[in-house]
Image (cartoon, rainbow, N blue to C red):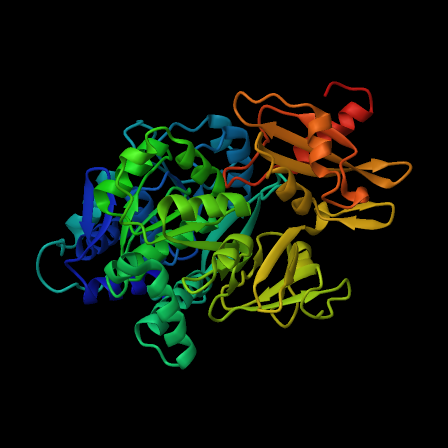
Length: 548
């Protein structure tokens, strides 16, 4: 199906089920579809057609959902961007994406708009007076066709045909490099991870093997009443991630297309997140590790009723094992520790209900349905389990390529559909994936390979350390030296010697950092990943005699 066909199919089966909650907005499947179709007709009246780019500079909320699926209905290409993107970076992306429509709740500078000479419509989604009001575009669409929000059959939209393999989304990702690049996705590649999740749910509801029955019995013994309340019923899913990220898009689609309900928090705040969990009886919570840290540190946490939670899922960045255990112990629910890629349209691996506490906390789980994994050497030859090398993945969700970057695409995608991720990892004997770090972040010191994530995980077991980032810096003697940037916990005071003493006797000598620097905060992207390029630049400046 296309995205719009999938939304229509869910509305046809469950028209009166509440599917979307955001502030005062509460929508059933039928109401959501009617709003989407109104905006699609409004866009069509403005001249938006197949292949046109629609930039959604929007926070999570109803306006984003309407734009996402309305673009899908028309065969247009959605380009979701962070609402906090500053004009210089926005201008660069607008120049690359060449949109015809920009929907935003905030003013955009003339310099940024000038980078998109083909932009025909600036649409105001928040009363900022930046262009044509979104509500008026939707009203024009409703006038063209009587709304089916409350009565009658769900009539087809009647617009030109769109196929599942049509280009549908440009998802920009800068990762930890700071340089945005767009991954190209079709309707099919973004729906594939949702289909995989549906298949997993189907297996649990209709066990087809003795192993699944045994796994279900194990999970029931561990989670008891929480599992009985949740299994076989629509879930209430909440995420605090931006919907311009692949994790945010993936969770949004799961909430809207799997027969569940989506509870939306446009911007993260611990108190508001806890209030929403309590008020809407959230069963599945999806956040980045840094958001979980803020939630667990919130002084009023114990005053909120979080007993509805069945699954806490962590994604977007590596979740330290100690934090994973703290999440499980605090909320007394299952932890879905996962790994995904923008290039794969969403999730690649995830831990499960049946997994042990160690497997949920210390791994990122096993491949999702339809995903193949292998660990390969420099010649892209498959290696046995236990070997640490580059992770390659294959599945229906793999991107079509990088936009305007055929050489970059050819470097990571082969003719057989394997995506070479640049992540260093290994598969254990039970088939669980362990992420060690990024290929470009591996430090070679005296001929020995050092994986920064291993040092970071150990340092973060120190009771006074909040977060760390380890980088390699060129050294005339050893090839590279190891620099550890340490963010102490609030109010804590530490010395470099304490940090090094924590390493001595617990790790090989060649892995112990050469230098320790304390910072008030580790620079990070919005998904919580450390921006190591900034720390490496800081170290190089210091080595060359510049300011730290």
